Length: 162
Image 1: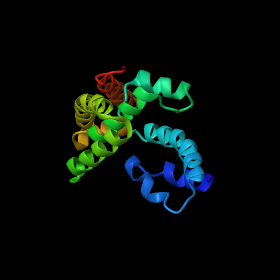
Image 2 (image 1 turned 180 degrees about the vertical axis):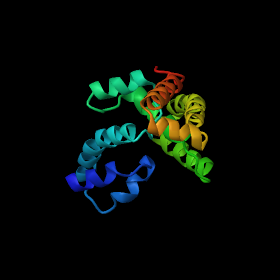
Image 3 (image 1 turned 90 degrees about the vertical axis):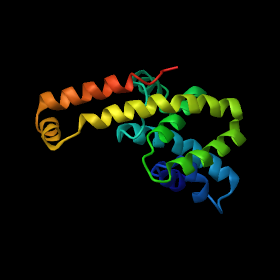
């Protein structure tokens, strides 16, 4: 079960977890999910792959990386709003169907309204490292690194925290 949880926590695409648990007993899968979720959240935040308001990140940390209902919506919105793959629309519709089946249409609609601010914050963050000179300044100087980190935090504050 711990090995399965470790495998799951290293998979970025949350909606694909069900493909990796086939053949395991339901009780083991449920236990693995419970262990993997906080590990996954912590890893995705530390890898800067989740776009969440800094206050929400602090809340998650205080909750031992266990997201509540609203935080789950924020996480799904982050995953969908930050997806730059060619299959992003197809992925969004698959996730939409899955979330509606699991939580209901109102739950999905709340996720959907959160996607646009995530996308805007992600685009602003991308501009921080635009260009080789700016990237060199950021990676080679303390001032540049601090300025980029502060700009990233300002961009993440564009995302609602409720």
